[in-house]
Length: 450
Image (cartoon, rainbow, N blue to C red; front, side, top):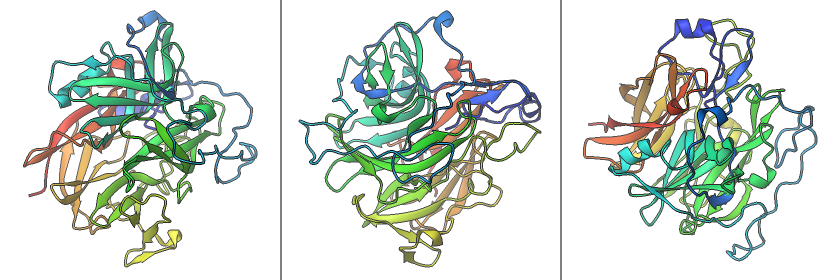
């Protein structure tokens, strides 16, 4: 989602040190050159392969999309340009590891790659190593009950024997300083880890959101269904539905997938945190491409939907009960009326709030790379409860990796904390999306509130 392939020459000159997402424009009126995200398929651990040579790595150029309509699963709002909604994929009748859901093959955990470093440093070094994961963004880390970490990414680039492929979502299993790549398809034709069978490359795809371990011991991950409404990838993207996937934390096999209890486009599940008797589901509209004009320069390319991107609302369910209809915080009390939900994260001076929330040292903390692709500030907020009131206790500056690079989407890492600090990961990209070594997360330590 951080594909800001929308950077113009004017924008770069005005904000050379700011961050813009994974994709950008070379100049006003010129074709958008898109930085890539790979297309992952059903879960199979890929055999490590040698990185593709520069000659075989395709530049992700504003991919033209066929005029065929996108089949829309779930209860997405009908639009004339995406055709009639299709029936949602059917989950298995029972949770069984004998019969797996259609399109979600049983994971094949292949050889792993180990890095001679501590786990935090190893994570920053593994992309671009002999592991065939060349680049990715929107990193989300989930602590599994056995101590391993499951990372989920959007738009990853996966190296294959014939070149580099963009996969819309992949997983990375971390055990200490060792890693395994998990995706669908195989090493030659990788496909998404989740929803591979209903993904239509660059037209309809699925991006992982937040999640947590449920009351039944499974890992639950919310997933945004995305539709492209223009003739090029990331020209005008809309989230249309929220799905819920349950994953066996031991085998990493998908057990079931279904529309979330709140399956709308508000994306409750953008960030998820358990606190005492409840699990809290935060919503962020995640409208990044093709909506409103650029803030810094004239451009024919639209960017975020400024009417909603600053607002983060919250709902809750009984702890670990993701099957229950949520209730929403209206500023004074919990209600069943989703339309009454109010923004809980500070919005003053923030045009985009892609906030992630966690409980750190028994404190509810929110981390926000403010203004998404632009700027360099990560705001740290703290609250006595997951629904506020929130107060900013610090701001951390994150440096871009080069003069034409940007940073975006900060997430909280479930390891590396000390008595005074905790660890966050940040997505990085190059405005023109063609320098793969910059399309990888970095990590930094930030202070816990005193």
